[in-house]
Image (tube, rainbow over all chains, first blue to last red):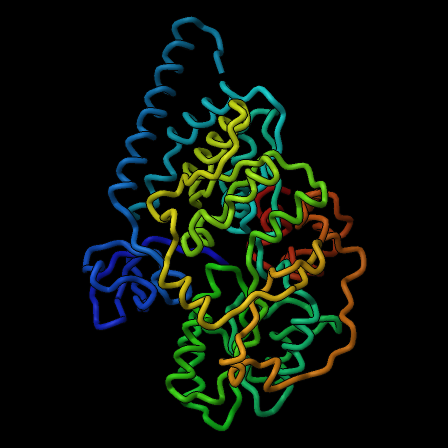
Length: 89
Length: 360
């Protein structure tokens, strides 16, 4: 029930916004957010017709960067395992 | 889709799994509180990527599952009234009441039951049907309750005297504390991401302090969940239990202040009954007196017989994390998604439904 996925704001009309998720679009109320901080192109989380938070793209990019390290670490381990012919983890 | 696909990257998930295997030494049990997390964990098969030392158990965070049968019984009585239109999110309509009827069955018999996507749709129905009483069934935790609050405020402003909320809204922390008090063995919590979007991290700060357990507030994609598990394993191995936010792209430490204000405007805390946990102090959201003209329980009081739980169903034990769906004799024999006996099988985010679909 608490599900919510990121939607891109396509149009703002007062307290209401048209948002898109993939190829679908939804109307959502912006009344739970600070209107002056919201603009077209922002991503918001929509839950039961209300945008409940603006997605922090800087935080999203930063976390994805951290994940890249895990990916690299995994690749390194794979390489090491291959070279030594043993399973490390 | 942007900000979803990146968090489903297989290589990153495997990288995180390897790191968890590398640092995990002690045998631990981690509870995912939220039903949305349970669904995601089973769907992506995450338990199979974890070492034997880390066990995941599902918690009480499925609103349909913890809602009392008495609530459903009352909703069924409302549905049978000629001058009532029931409006509800889709999750509730297949939940059986004590007499085995459901809102869906009542609808088939002629009751006016309408599934809405948002409480705002229910307000529109109230506006167009002034001679009818529109009852909105409000279930859900802190994520969903602000929408109900917004609906009540709007109804009051628009003078929609025929709009009523039947609230079974609940708040998470008392349930999380009650589980530990009851002695359920947990070494850390994966905190609900969207509840926390509204509340912020403050509601969990007592858990490390009072009970010595860590809480990591997590997103819903497999990469999010694996990273949260890694963060909890690190906390436990380093003996440094605290509240951390993994889902930083959405959850702010202070939460959503505007939504919190709405909650505070409309609701106050009251004792509430949870399946599996019983009555928990201050765990329910009751409508404040100043909005009582929109409180279904006050304006349209109904009497029901004491509710009866289905025989043999262990949904309560499953919600506490002490049993798993496979421990239930009814699971996948007589109790299936097409013929659910208990609430944990009805709700798509119930543990039984998740295990039935993905891990039988």
